[in-house]
Image 1 (cartoon, one colour):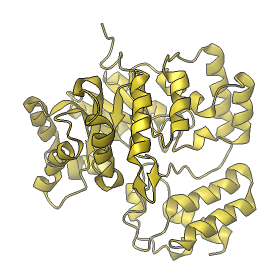
Image 2 (tube, helix red, strand yellow; image 1 turned 180 degrees about the vertical axis):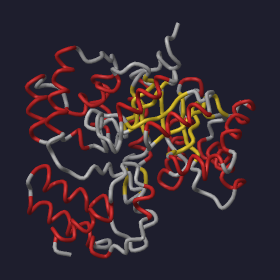
Image 3 (cartoon, one colour; image 1 turned 30 degrees about the horizontal axis):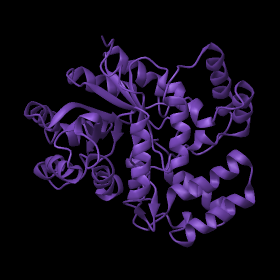
Image 4 (cartoon, helix red, strand yellow; image 1 turned 45 degrees about the horizontal axis):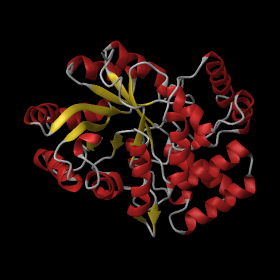
Length: 374
């Protein structure tokens, strides 16, 4: 018997946000191979969203998964983006579109996407989306429903108090952000568990940065286990928490899939010595002042001057984390050759309004402009 909803779900989730691409389009054949490896290893949880890759992620789920495997052999999660649509009817139409794109017949885990204090009141409540997902569950089009969340513990507590029938929440949890006040990983986790909610984990590797952490962290983890990949430490850390349904990994190639399956096929929680190593790594990473960008690219879609913000921040982080001043400058030059320079920011603020990490994007762009000279 399960102690909590989803306890027996295999703990590695395949996030379909960063799929392999050729010439800017999702490589379906490569994706099929990754899906086959994932399924053969006994994993079952796939995660996409209405807005990922402009809908191409959901279509890829159909081609690589739904059309090729029995429907009962996997679970599919997708999300409703409350900010997409001119009115309530158009917002709600997303579920029908997602069902058409995926061909899944029903959605196992349906999420209201990227909630914070403002969107909860002015988007999701205003458009009656809570009642909408309840109605769709009653119709059988949704098996379970919840929401993904990017805000403070008090907001999460309010949402769960006012909507006690929420079945699960999706939270950003990783060892680097566990005590980060801007992300509030530990505090949000504790609020969710206080309400008895199961959790799907997003960004366990922090947009890939924990797969290649700062040198001080690498030294600690390699001393603890020379054979373990850095990504394995990050994923196993959150998978070891109580109440976890699945830990999403946005895998982009077969090599990443192989690595993840090597330790998650027969998942074992971190032992006491490994937990000690993680605590040391947390102390080390807290001493590195970097820009906490996860390259989700939510900021770029509405940028009026086309600034490649994640690429610019990655260039700056190459300098901050690794001390590679020339390499960072070269990365910046390549990024801005195809998009706006940091200095072209018009300070409209749309990027800061959608950033899940709550980065002061305008301030950081000014900093990058000063460092890189334009």
